[in-house]
Amino acid sequence: SNSAQIGILASILFLLICWLIRDSLIVKDLNGKHVFITGCDSGFGNLLAKQLDRRGFHVIAACLTEKGSQELLACTSLSLKTVILNLTDSSSIDNAVEFVRQETDGESLFGLVNNAGTATPMAPTDWLQIDDFHAILDVNLVGLIEITLKLLPLLKRANGRVVNVASVMGRLAFLGGGYCLSKWGVEAFSDILRRDMQHFGVKVSIIEPGCFQTGITSSEAIERDLLRLWNQLTPEVRESYGDQYFVEYVKAQRLSMKRLCDSDISKVTNCMEHALIAKYPRTRYGPGWDAKFFWLPLSYAPTLLSDTMLSMLLPTPAASRKSVSRVPLV
Ligand SMILES: NC(=O)c1ccc[n+]([C@@H]2O[C@H](COP(=O)([O-])OP(=O)(O)OC[C@H]3O[C@@H](n4cnc5c(N)ncnc54)[C@H](OP(=O)(O)O)[C@@H]3O)[C@@H](O)[C@H]2O)c1
Ligand SMILES: *[C@@H]1O[C@H](CO)[C@@H](O)[C@H](O)[C@H]1NC(C)=O
Image 1 (spheres, rainbow, N blue to C red):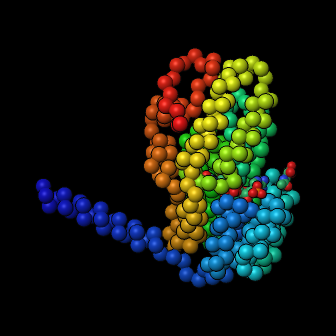
Image 2 (tube, protein in one colour; image 1 turned 90 degrees about the horizontal axis):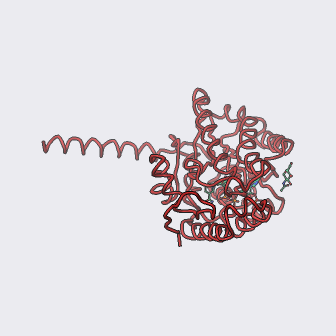
Image 3 (cartoon, rainbow, N blue to C red; image 1 turned 30 degrees about the horizontal axis):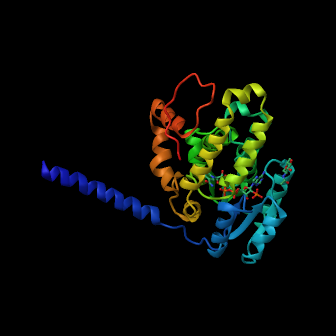
């Protein structure tokens, strides 16, 4: 009946308003709390470091290079500190952890943002060697786990926050190479960490961005890397794909980066900030319209549907035994 419908609608509206209010509550006394961010040379990490610095946090920004560190120091307040961190190197991780301990007087660390990451090479699986997988997994997954384990004692003392950057591409396992594996691994590690740490008041959030214009999605870097792999292929593998495949693959990547990637990366850093300052941080954040309305729904779709959609986005190898009708991105 009519009144039952109104009742249901009113209840939904009420729950929505309650959720919005709950979502907007902020932790008190954030000023001067320490937050450690990895990968601050460029992209999301760089912007987040500046954003949190302005907000009054004590930011400890880890950069891969001295150049990145100097550039960041030049445009931030004196309370922001940088440290060099190479996640593939355990002694570099130990050094950064020691730096955090000193900066916090061995006391407590409120926030850890695991943002650093690398994405190349990303290519069809039979173009890759095992070292190509190591190049990504060692940074994005194993490095992330190692730094998290070593900072957990400090985070537990602060009832702190861990913010891990995965990717909606990881949920979908779209492109070949270590990237999607690493991001899927980050999802699993974060889900487990959240449940293990809930008893100690440590909250864990996962950021699953769509495509944004940063160093990682720059088409020059991706193309250079694809060309290197293509030139290394055995004649047999190369013939099974055909020169045309390479040309179209590069073109498809270039166009999708240009068309789909958002230039407003503050959408991502605002989610990271919410995960740090909200009284009730969300478990997952999906910044970007492409993530919300395309990649995420597709990741929940039946395999038949997602496989068909994804194969339409990529070219077909010359030796394909299956004729796939294709709608190129062009
Ligand atoms: N952009 C997107 O569309 C997108 C989408 C989903 C997820 N993400 C994720 O967002 C995070 C940030 O990426 P971004 O888009 O901001 O790209 P970015 O500008 O390339 O930032 C990545 C950062 O990680 C650093 N890094 C690379 N290798 C490292 C290592 N071995 N040890 C320590 N740091 C290392 C990079 O240093 P250098 O600059 O010196 O190389 C850089 O500062 C990554 O985890 C990425 O996977 C990005
Ligand atoms: C990071 O460490 C690895 C191995 O420890 C090394 O090969 C690589 O060159 C280092 N990267 C940078 C930018 O120093």
